[in-house]
Image 1 (cartoon, rainbow, N blue to C red):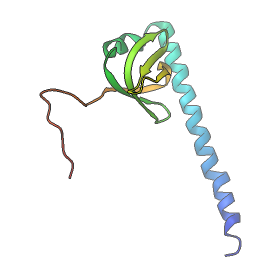
Image 2 (image 1 turned 90 degrees about the vertical axis):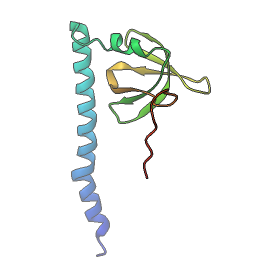
Image 3 (image 1 turned 90 degrees about the horizontal axis):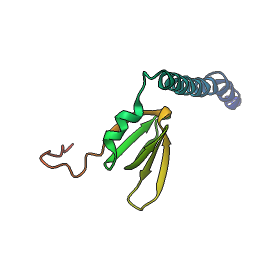
Length: 115
């Protein structure tokens, strides 16, 4: 049992590092395919996002991070978001996997309570 760290390092080298690398490669492939589709005119993400200008949204990216804010403008392949504090962020549409309108302040909708 004195060599547990040796087995930990072997496990890390054989499984964890290749899994992280495979995820980054998959993200790059998705972004490349989106760029190709956009150049061909098949993929019109900008036209879809224009419906969300002025609305508060939650944007999920390919790396599983989420960005929340109000869409202020969209140009070329970039979305500008402004949060509650007035800070602005820019997100590349190639890496967007999901856009959802923020469920707050919706009239006529009941909030779901999870117990």
